[in-house]
Length: 210
Image 1: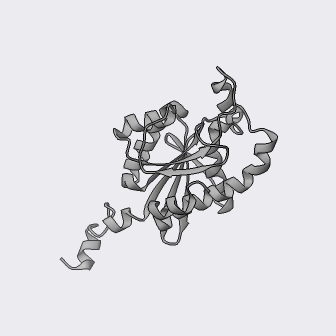
Image 2: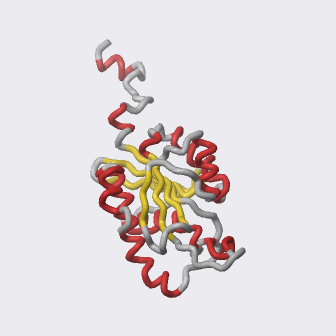
Image 3: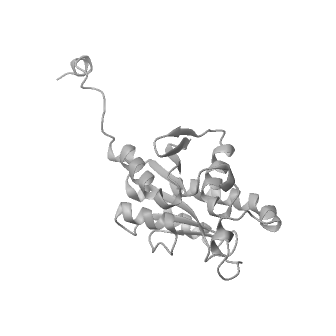
């Protein structure tokens, strides 16, 4: 059938992405809790990194199903930035929905989260691993039915006294941390862009431990 008649019959409209198109599309998910009282807490570093990335590139988030969404296009790649509105413990629900809706392959998923086991500001990129007791990662693992998904862990250290972990992660950054945070956010934004442009292995080599 000639191209003219395909278009006339409506057959020329693509409904499926090609494999090449899929590989140029990424879902970057920042984990956190919604609401002003959580904005500057350590547990919300995932949201904060995505907000920094959006501001840096003059794009804005819009409220959509199960989260706030922004689209960043860089060098032929499309990055869907997602801040789930499901609260931390149900993060996986939003992640699974947007992966399927946008037809993004799981290897192009990057989950950005806080980590108590790393010193403040340390950056660590991994392709798999346990949830480490993190409820957001635990739900993601349950919903995706795998521990093999990319995650970017931002160190928040573990400088809290016994029994005070919840207060610590839901507490706000101290003055010393705040003074160093902007540089760490800039480095984190570079890591996210590198993930999409250079691939996870090159990005791990360049940023892990930096």
